[in-house]
Length: 393
Image (cartoon, rainbow, N blue to C red; front, top):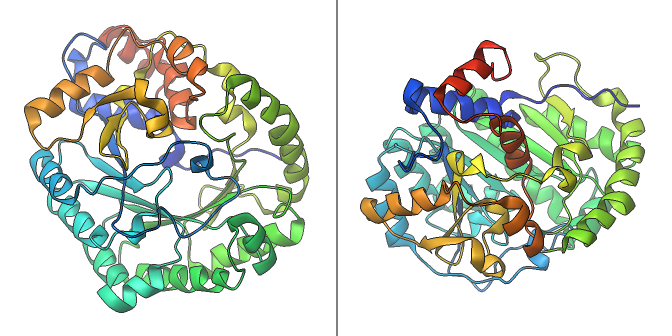
């Protein structure tokens, strides 16, 4: 059986939230006391003005089953970033069914985010990196404003043209274009004295890309590109899958793929935190739907999500018109309205077991980690008691 090593700090979600609350709310923090707290991050599922939601058709994409809608809100988003002025310290730019690099304003958003003192995380398939660098100096501008708190995450998901084609449902030759873009990013990273931003590669496992040769190839790619980490994990059942379907998916797909991957991954996983790239594996228990019986959701202190449809949602897993019951309100740049929406996101009466599970919504890994840990916290004394006992070190 493969040895599961600790994930990098960026994947230790409860600890990250603990640090945020200590820094922002301090000893006076009392959860759900009717006073909104700026969350640790806002995730933005960035829409675009093209005819495409995304330029890939990945077999594991959560967007396959959900309703998709887009609303171009560029001016409002620029206004929101300015008005937040760094009070939310992290902006995560990604997409539930959209690819952020299709938006030509992406670099302008990131430059504005950095001007407020906040950090960014960019989740992308990487296909357009080389093209955007040629036309906009996208990566050069990105790296010029970055610091060690920023990161780029590229969904690799393949070790060869063949597995790339099967997993992404596009011509396998496009794998070369992704690697070209990641290579440019790696070279620019080497030029920064602080080696920022962090360059993360992710790899979602499936029967077409789990062979030892595929895994070995991806590790070699990560090393050659100068990546900080390479994360292997198993795709969720797509959001919107009814809970019985998610449980069946767990037994019929997650467990068998995990068993196969465990043997093949063992020789390549990192054993030291100093390894670069740090190669690690997130096992099925980190995304187990059977852990979702939480009576309250603390994830609202960790994040809020702006969907591609212009609505604000409770979390990234529900940011689609499919989950209209999880909407908090419409996109706004006005702070008094935004604060009211934050308060709704930190509602003590929101019960995930009753509201999420029947709707086919599921906790992300971050939400599972946070709710399992912070469910023990009722006031500031509880928070500090957990810290003193090393449970939130």
